[in-house]
Image 1 (cartoon, rainbow, N blue to C red):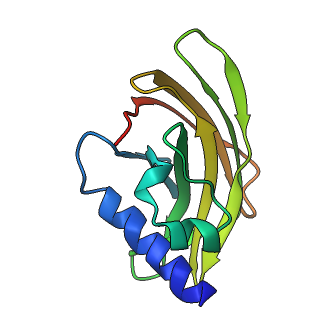
Image 2: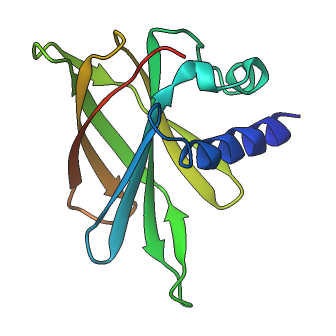
Length: 149
């Protein structure tokens, strides 16, 4: 059941990439590695998916999802493990550290953190990802505002 819930969670996240306005997705190429991210309100998660992944649903909680990708021997992107850390700052520069958790389904690996926001508040994310076996941190900075659904 948990595996099916995780599958639903991952399917939901890819579906979120298609939604305009509320969710935000981006990527940055670092040569051998790429970082992908998306941000969305936790209320986009179904209660079942949130419960299965120990995530809170609230109109004041957002979710940031990071994945580290590299190309396999066929040139196709594949997720890889590592560590992700970061912080988020609101529009008056109050900084909160993000507690990323690793979620894995088969070969897929995602790093998820939740944060609090006020509707329309511009949140700036500073993320550092370290792929397994790579000594250097891959850094991205992006900003996004969420609104209640």
